[in-house]
Structure formats: C-alpha cells, structure tokens
Length: 304
Ligand SMILES: NC(=O)c1ccc[n+]([C@@H]2O[C@H](COP(=O)([O-])OP(=O)(O)OC[C@H]3O[C@@H](n4cnc5c(N)ncnc54)[C@H](O)[C@@H]3O)[C@@H](O)[C@H]2O)c1
Image 1 (cartoon, rainbow, N blue to C red):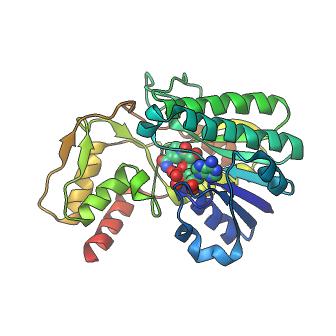
Image 2 (image 1 turned 90 degrees about the vertical axis):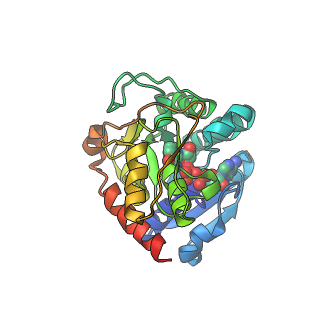
C-alpha cells in the first residue's frame, strides 16, 4: 500500500515509518523538521520518500496526498508547558493542520489514523480510564487534541474513515531529549551520573507504552475494518514516577537518590488506560514489559 506519515521524521512517526517499511509498504514522510531529526530515518532512508513540508501548506499537501491509500497523521506541536505561551501556534498546527488532513481525506477517500492523546481526558474521576470518560483537558495542548476529536467526529459523519489513537506515555529510542518524556529525561540524567528530577511528590502514576507496540497499533488500526473510533493505546498498567526513578537508579547501581522539584502546571494527577477497546476492535495489546526494557537499557547505558 501507498502510505503517508506526517511528522514521520519525529519520534513516533519514524517508528511507524520503520514498521511500514518492514511490512513492505511504500512510504512518504511529510515533516517540516520543527523538532525532527533526519537521522531518525537514516537506517531506511533509501527505501522511503522524504518531503520537507508544512502541513499548513494546503495546496502542496493536496498535491502530495492525492494517491495515498492512507495517512498516519503524527505531525503536531507536543509540549504541554510551551502550549501555555504559544496557544496560537499550537492551534494552527494541531487543529488547522489536522483539519487539512481530514478535508483531504474527504476529497480523496483515504483513511486517516491519527495521534490523539490521553491528555484529552484531564483529571478523570477514576482509573483505568475508559474511552467514554468525560473529556476535560487541563492545558492548551490537550485542548487542541480535543478540538481534533470534535473535527474527527464531524468528518466521520461526512463519510471519512478516521481512527484517533489516544496514546498514553510513549517511550523508547529516538525521543528528542529537548522534547522528551520523563523516561528519556531520567535515563539522560543517569547517563551523566546525575539524579532523576521528579516533578512534584512523584506519587502520580502513568501508563508507559513502548514505541514499537504503538507503531504496530497504528498499522493494525489502518488495516482494521473500523471506520471511526477513539482508542486508548497504553498497557493497562500504572507506575508511579517515584517507582520509575527507583527502578532506574537500582538498575544503574549508582548511589544516588531522586530529587523532587515543583509540580508542573497542567500536569494530570493519574493516568492509566483501560485497554479493552483496543483488544476488541483491533486485536492489539502492548507486548513490551517496561521493567525489562528499563533494566536492559540502563545496563547498556552504564556500559558506555
Ligand atoms: N510521545 C508521546 O508520549 C505522545 C503521547 C500522546 C500523543 N502524542 C502525539 O503523537 C504525535 C507524535 O508525537 P512525538 O512524541 O513523536 O513528537 P515529535 O515532536 O517527535 O513528532 C512530531 C513531528 O511533527 C513535526 N511537525 C511539527 N509541526 C509540523 C508542521 N507544521 N508540519 C509538518 N510537520 C510538523 C515535527 O518536526 C516532528 O517530527 C503528536 O501528535 C503528539 O501530540 C505523543
């Protein structure tokens, strides 16, 4: 099949591209390299087409997507803290950019699997969170993801096939350190012999899902018969940030203790996915065990 991946040079996008190449699909990457690195694609660069392009450039986008069988839409501005100070930019890229993809899907008839986020939920009354929980984001980034869901609902009624994958905390190789999630930040500190810095009391829990599992979920969603859904993509397990720090420190063998900083504005208290819908609709389930991956990765880091 002929697939396009927007944000395909970024963290999650590049793993989707890699998985598609492994499955012998033809892949075109659209990315404006805002946060992306070309080296994310280096191992399979000769097997794909890479276009340095902005998803806000509608006419250019239109000329490229015409013959696509499907689009994986990952391009977005992704920093919760930055979204408080750059609300217009976040709205432009995350909402207008996403609507561009949905509009073109309506015109040309391809299916869209796109990156929604667990941030659409905000602080829920109970965890694990089911897809029908109330959506009340706590920050402008989450608001853009919720607006995208409203757009997805609208375009699905117009006949477009759209699946929004609500990723929980995705971890794994190729995360840009400047834009990284908590696991990458803790590992970076450990690599430099420094203590992990925990935002707040560290009692908050997260559902960490491995990047290759996420890439597989994307293709399974594209190939599924499902025409419209929002689906949680997590493991169904929760780990506190304190426990995460302690696992990493223990695996490193370093004699250090985590340091606590102030809590982050707009950060949810607890996040854990109910993953039964992903199993039911896509036959997908996360396979990678976080603790195994952390132990192996920390050992690798300590060897270098
Ligand atoms: N990483 C996570 O844990 C997580 C969790 C929930 C949702 N998401 C969503 O998953 C998607 C991918 O996130 P990621 O973690 O890989 O981040 P990332 O920053 O690595 O990827 C985003 C990509 O989009 C590109 N981009 C940004 N603006 C663009 C524009 N105007 N035109 C074209 N390309 C543009 C960037 O250069 C980058 O390659 C995003 O939509 C994000 O909101 C990520």
